[in-house]
Image (cartoon, one colour):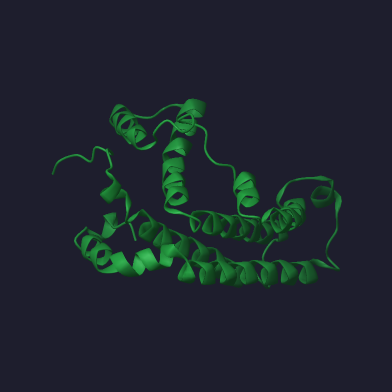
Length: 210
């Protein structure tokens, strides 16, 4: 089989929102399931981390739902993340390095190959910053080893805090899924679903992307 060269045409890029729909749906469902599994006895830092991840996914769903351009940028940022990781720690084997060099064709020249979109900037762009800032600040108090999390004692309030975080995370997850369904990401998925299913089923089970 001919190697994938990453030189994508406009036609090649059109199904990208459909793939984003699938990946977002799976990520949101996974984190929501994790919340429900740990809602009774889960560690507060873990539940706060899961809920914060759902919050960030909500921002990215909104951002990528704005336009085809934003969807393409999110895919490009996956390559930029790899570039940034490679810059930081190196160690990419020669074959993967060649693939990454080819993948950089997909980035264009809009910004440096390692400069990915920050979730805070995305939240600002889609007018979700007030809400993102409020919840992110609250959740981060339990995610990071700050004075509160290191010195605090929550034996009398842990259940209440845990319940609050699960409610916040579940509500945001449901909202994100609803947004996906009515956005052009959902429309793209329904349009390209037969083709996606056909290509996916043709792959060996261990190598299927979905």
